[in-house]
Structure formats: structure tokens, C-alpha cells
Amino acid sequence: MTAPFEKLVSAPTIHVILDKLFHPKITDMLHAFIPGLFFVVCVVLGSPQFAKGIIASASTERSIQLFLVLFVAFVLGSALIQWVRLIQIVLIEFYKHLSDWQPRILNWRINRAAKKDAAKIPHVGQAAAPTGASSRTWRRLQAAQGRRIERSGEVRDTQRAWGEVATQLLERRYGIKVPYTDFDWSPWVKVLGIDQIRIEDKRGFLFTMAFHATGWGGLLASYLVPGIRIWTFLIFCLFLIVYGLLHDRQVAMSINDDGYQWRLALTYVLVELRKAREADGPSSKSDDN
Image (cartoon, rainbow, N blue to C red; front, side, top):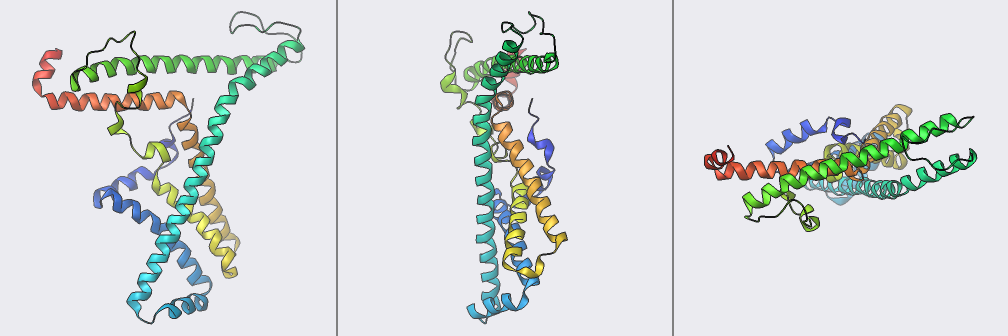
């Protein structure tokens, strides 16, 4: 089962602090300055004469020069973050197709192992595993098949819990009485609890994405300025990139994990139901009792 990607990073604490200090939109803009300013600093330190020549050719006033530096840092930082987002989209699509093909590949391997042992494809837990050199491979395949069936059972249990909570939410907040069984929930799955969706659940934490983009900005600066091509600096940039790729991989796996997505949906409707009960006041609590 895919673990929540929040466990991979410690960025939420810093992100929450910034949200308390600034408006969320301003916080998102500030993240773009991290990779952009890092790139500018690397260019200035690696080739001061080159940087001074570009800034001096633009204007002689210090205020305009400072504005140009900040503007270039913001534009470049935003572009680097969009590059990171593109990597995320590619990984999401890759794991989407991989999740579609994994059951087919597993069934093909089981068929292949069964044919090698001249046996029929057994159902999990019914037929004995074949003997011989492929017995260990067969056990691994059966264990993988068992985990897949177990995960599908967990998804069904979560869907059932979501339906129970959604039934109460529709009746309490919207006055819509629906039967829990024999009811088409398809139109409601993507609507109920939508107000509780966090952007971090769809793209990961922007603070981590900014540091990922910083690594790419450092590599770009080292390409343009040979003076900073030292192994310690390159290792630091590669560390940021690898860490960001691990974060993006976990985001992509979580988005394509049905169990994790249904647990998120259950959390959303639970939060919305709690808010609906709080809005009703003490009378609703006495009715429940």
C-alpha cells in the first residue's frame, strides 16, 4: 500500500508558518523567488563581471537594478517550478499506465508459471503451489496476487464507509434523502467534500517543489558560469533534484492509488459533515443522541 507522501517531507510546518504570516497567494509567489534568487546569486558569485555588465547595461539607478534582479529571479524561478510541475505530470501519467498494466502483467506471469509446471491457474488459497525450481517464484506471484486482492477489499470497505457518511451529509446539509443501497453515487463522488480538498493533495508541497527547482537552477547556473563547476556545488544540486524526484514520485503514486484517494475522499466528507453539525448547533447533537 502506498504510504501518504506527507511522510516523505517536513515542508508542511514551514508552509503553515508562511500561510499564517502572509496570504496564501503571496506565499505561492514567495516560493518562486527561492530557485530564482539562488540562480542569480550563483551567477553573481561565479562571474561578478558578467553580472555587473548585464545589470549596468540595463540601468544606472540602483532601485531599477534591484527591481530587474528581483523580476528576473521571479520569472526564472516560476519557470523552474513549472518545469518541476511538468515532471510531476509525466510521472503521474507514467504511474497511471503502470497501475493499469500491473494486473495484466501479474496474470501473465502467473499463467506463464502455471504453464511451466503443466498446471491450471489456481485461485488464491485453493490450489497448491507447483513444486520444482519455480516454487519460490510461484509463491512470490501468489503473494502479490493476495496483496492485490487485499487492497481491492480495503478499497471496497472505504467506499462503503464513504457512502454511509455521504448519506448523512446529503440529508443534514442539503436536505436530500437517499437510500444507501440501490443509489448511483457516481455524480456525487467528485462533488461532496470538494471544499476540503487541499492543493497539496494534488501536487505535493510547494516548498519542496521550490527546492527541487533550486537544484535545477543550480545546474543551469553551472552550465552558464564555469566558475562554479565544483563537485561540492554539483553534489548539492543533485541532492536537491533527487530529493525532489522522490517527492514527485510519491505524489504520482499517491494520486494513482485508489485506496489512498478513497481515504482522502472519506476524510473530506467527514470534515464537511462535522462542519455541518457544528453549523446546526446543539440541537443537532441532541437529535443524534
